Length: 255
Image (cartoon, rainbow, N blue to C red; front, side, top):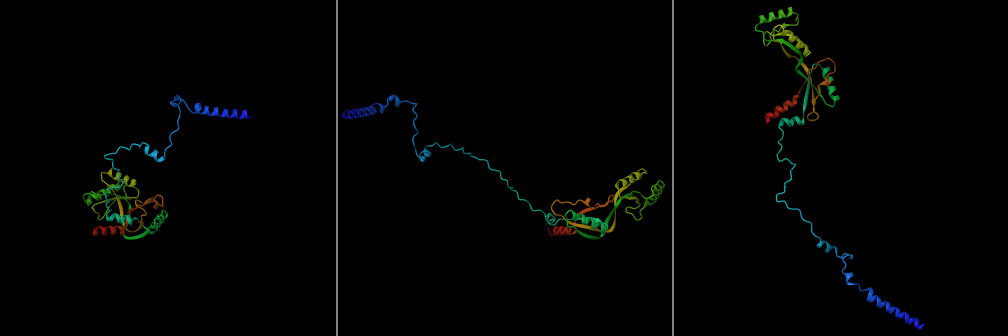
């Protein structure tokens, strides 16, 4: 038993000597090898930021381009007084209408498309009658009378000398609702050596007008909505309302 204990003590001593002299002392060759991977050193975050290379700043432009401004530098002139009145209270008169029936139908047609029309009666108005064909360049009444006789002998029955005409000695050759018929009559008279004229024929008559407030700038009134009877010709005008005209005149005088 004693021999066994001495043997174990001897073995432990030999193992200790081997570990110190052989296993813990690597050779110089091992220490100088470049393929040995060593872990990176541990540093603080503040030290890493301080030692990191700073990125190069962009080159400074001596004369940087100026940004284009979207705002206009020129002042916008205010609209003239007439334009302001027309923009704040635009009003258009439609007409003339010969009778109350036509005016009422036109008023209903305007309401149907969203307007708010107001009817107005005008005592001293004019109504379009048609296209008038006439000859106005005759030198004397005798020549005018001779022309009337000659034309009637050649089938132009609706010719007559207009009494008290201006210019004098005017021959009337008919009033036509259709322009093509008026032109055909003028060509017929030209064939006899005369120089006829075609003009709008109007007559004095009490009339009705419809005043309409325009809802938005640039809005217009389509006069075709008033054509209720096929074949019936309506010669309508669009003009400024009387109150608008009066306001514009007053403003122009004040300016």
